[in-house]
Length: 299
Ligand code: 13P
Image 1 (tube, rainbow, N blue to C red):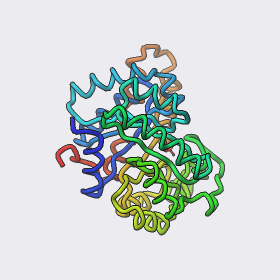
Image 2 (tube, helix red, strand yellow):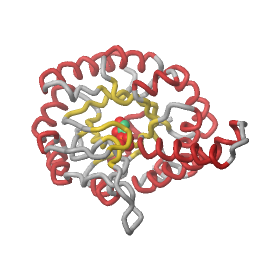
Image 3 (cartoon, rainbow, N blue to C red):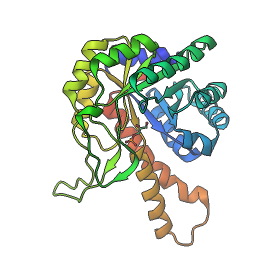
Image 4 (tube, rainbow, N blue to C red):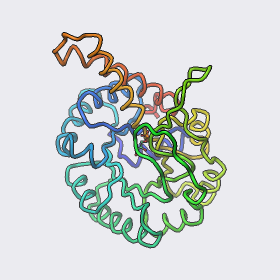
């Protein structure tokens, strides 16, 4: 497999983004890897701290190794929103390819200091593991919300972004440009749209990119529910990784609820779960197409 760095660099050079899809069980992993394989796309499987605890870091590493061997596609295993050096170390010692240290709740100075410690730890291992830092305040969590207010103060400052990457040496930077975690639930309208998140501040992304150039991989969290046109423009402006969780959770839970309601007497998991996996695959494939990473394993 290409190194994680080369996989991300190829996205940067060829102007597409790789989907980072969150997973915490076999069904979600299966849906993600099968979709990526079908579309010949590189893919990132991400686990938050909670998801990592649920499935087990060492176990997900082994499961992904087996899928990778069988399908021969590049899969990056990534820790999403690690909040402490201990969690980062646990992920690295479990064989993760990439780690996200989220110091965005700290002041700039402390965020730089702690992120730098993570980078030093990872680089000492000389393992090619990717380190993602975060700057700016991203609201919400990967669930449905009735409303989330975004303030201009939350957004990543372009000068601070440059200072952050130069002082920490991170490979990737997650930016706050009006994106939120989760989806704002709205009533259906005439076009049938039930969910819609606010527009991204694309001009802010442009300013950040002008400052940091290609020195770092720019990452967009909170990809669920974001207007598709905005995602495309964000990729044109330099985003090379888009995180998706809530839309997978919705597809998984809603389909499971529906199947159990329809087939009241069905008790066999391998007859219940295929429809759930199909529903998640549909979302993953739509996103891979939107991000432009179809056939990326050939690039
Ligand atoms: P969504 O749940 O909004 O897709 O965000 C996922 C994410 O950013 C994970 O870090």
